[in-house]
Amino acid sequence: MNFTQTLTYWYSINKRDFPWRRTKDPYKIWLSEIIMQQTQITQGLPYYEAFVAQFPTVFDLANAEEEAVLKLWQGLGYYSRARNLHTTAKHIANNLGGEFPTSYNELLKLKGVGDYTASAIASICHDEKTAVVDGNVYRVLSRYFGVDAPINSSKGTTYFKELAQSLLPSKNIGNYNQAIMDFGSQQCKPKSPDCTKCPFNTSCVALKNNQVEMLPIKINKTKITKKYFNFIVLISEDGKTVLEKRTGKGIWKNLYQFPLIETTKRLSIKNFHSNDVVKQILKGKKYSVSLYNDKEIVHKLSHQHLYTSFWIININELSEDAIKISDAYKLPVPILISKFMDAIDF
Figure 1: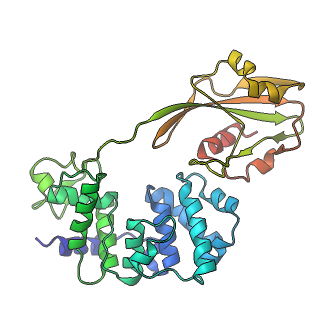
Figure 2 (figure 1 turned 90 degrees about the vertical axis):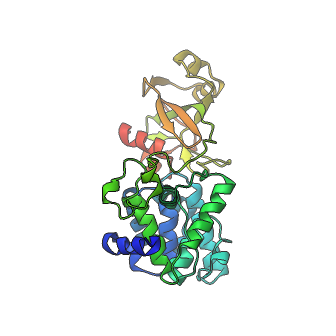
Figure 3 (figure 1 turned 180 degrees about the vertical axis):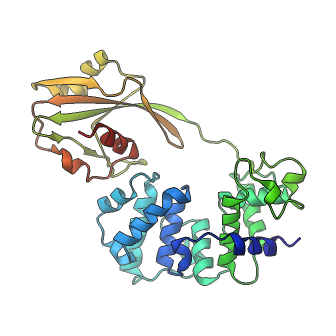
């Protein structure tokens, strides 16, 4: 059985209709690839449509304020992608005359563009013979060929890239790359794929050896840390609150949050009142304190779990840096805080 021909034929029947598949515009292909990284299609599609509507060209995106970009991105996570997106748009608009590089090697030089994204843009827009390798591709190739090399090892990464490259057809490279990604997403799913309907069920090594659920292999390198976040939600009598911009390094860089106290364990009401930051904020003020959530809200990130408490403080007045509560909704915030703001409706 010819793997490449069979896969391409499957795609001709099962191809999904997405807006970025109706264009060769590298700006829109780039947007779709960045947005869809580590994101399900159903979640990412509305974001793609919103970005294209608000920023129809790379110049529009380049000229936008970073806060506007982050606000539109809110809820997608991995905010470094949004910051890199904006930085790259400004580079292309200001230094490259709005023209995207046309080759894989030149695309790799763009901030936020790695092997997968460069291969996708180069092959789809310019039919360059370069294979995409993402989670879907790893899964399809490891199962079909019975490869047990860990996909997150240097040896595995090199092997799968070479294998994927060797399977490319002589033309219509972009079409083939999209075919293998779609196949992994629709047919060769991570959990409980329906192998009875798979066109490769007579030649798949993993199916023959009963290894479908075992492959691909990934070494668990990520150590999960536990942190305790205590957000101070100040609400003044004249309808104002305080949000602070995170300027340090980290996943929430340049997003806004309520004043934060980070502790090594859950904070009791007694310890909350005795905290130096709290005492400084409340000094000389009339106030009342209540804990919004009796049970901590656990926000799981790739490398850390945040055990979060929201302390609501109704206070008579706030300092000059306070903002109207209505304006707080306009600022980009982490999804954890966005959900809280929607729930409390303050």
